[in-house]
Length: 394
Image (cartoon, rainbow, N blue to C red):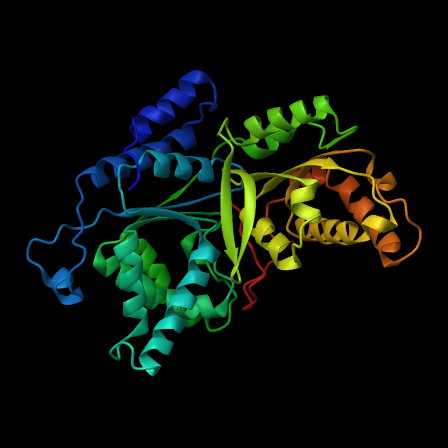
């Protein structure tokens, strides 16, 4: 059971303004008020759970669910920060905050498992979408989604039915995105089949655009050196300050991510920012899929103590090359401490890594530039063509 927050969302937001942790902004304050109003409505909302679907749908004393929120706007305007604060201070016990692609991957797994169970005769035949929605609702009826985006045709084809069931059950949904609902899955295959889902959003969620005057994320990086040498105590302290600045003063919390049956441990995670040591990222048997997941989930990654590498450390160098390629392709912001500048990080002249590291060094230099730091988080070739690669930043 989750502990009861000691303050409401409104109280927490006003305290952050008063302390100077959040800069006052009229557009942001307007969206914050929408969160505060929803927080109040949720305090008295008690959905019916652990009953049959029909009894939930047709009960005469059924409590009507509050409308959720869909907040969209440009990157770095505080959408994720506000949603995280709302989630943290909500008194709802059965709540979940997730990246949207992570939630949908789990939904597909549930659907597959139900189909297999039906085929084996373990459960009665039934609609697997309804079974999945029921299971999700019983676990969490307040769902908060970061990075709400649709690029995968497999997601697009089930979203309407899945969320229709979730809304029927009384689920309240909050989401952040950098695109308006009408622009979701734009240009995607068979988009006409996806359009009913957009209506689900507007029928059950209040849509608001956050037009804060400042890109707060970019502002936090201005004037901050992204590559710190040498990797000494001063660099450690600089990374500590950067963590506090980028995470809004959040405490470092570890996170375990399930990837294809394996666990990827994130030692320090908060508000779209993660922090690792070089050893955590490159001296352990991590794969490209691990780095891609990190690039999906985090807009900024801090790395401590990158060493100078030689041929004997080529396996770590290979992973580092893959890591940087993945972060670069997804416009993830990197701040790191290292024993040398990017050009001098790899000493060996033999092997494929020597040539590949030239590209890595070039990318590391570019990743410290103002033009790179101003890029939105997400794949630079992101489209809605049915690929699972596209990302949308919040």
